[in-house]
Image 1: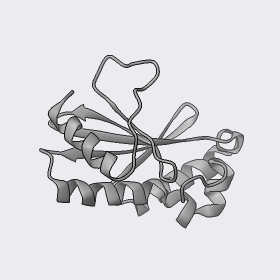
Image 2: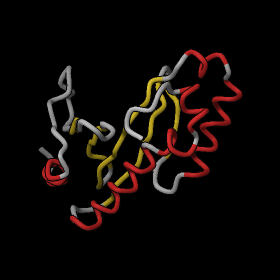
Image 3: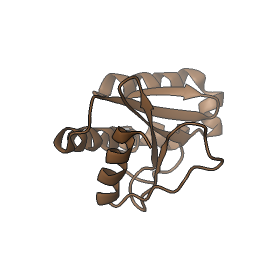
Image 4: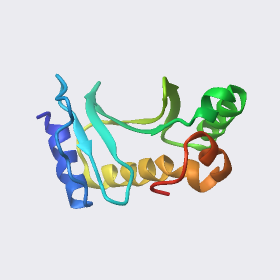
Length: 139
């Protein structure tokens, strides 16, 4: 496994995440991070760092009310500091790039912000989130 991913895997295990292998196994190094009360996410190496990605499934309303849904995505992107929200097919993706070598303090700050923003839709935009993403799971 990539040395940075190995360090990240140990760090998130300390936070209570398990890292079962993804199904089906991908052809790249990837961390599949799962926690009983926090959002799941994936991490893979990218351009001298690690790319973090979480997702929400979309409801039928997200497909039927595209103007409202796109306004919601714009509000999420305006409000976020670290992450980028985007849609592909039936999912809302939350993505952020951690650059450089592993540093426990820096990664801890990054993860705090990433997880805060990954749960932001249901905390700050509850009505739109429930309409376009369904009920909160980890907010």
